[in-house]
Length: 66
Image: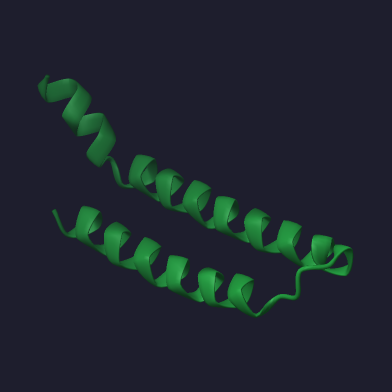
């Protein structure tokens, strides 16, 4: 339960930070690199959080108990 709660809180904080950075970017073609880097950062953090769930074993115990 605590892993799910920390995931929700972490994703919410990440969404607020990345959303505020997107909000301050100008709307021209010079910011394509910055927008791509922000999207890559968001996807990378979500991938790391899902790999953390697999490494802690909670996913495996759910499969074995089912």
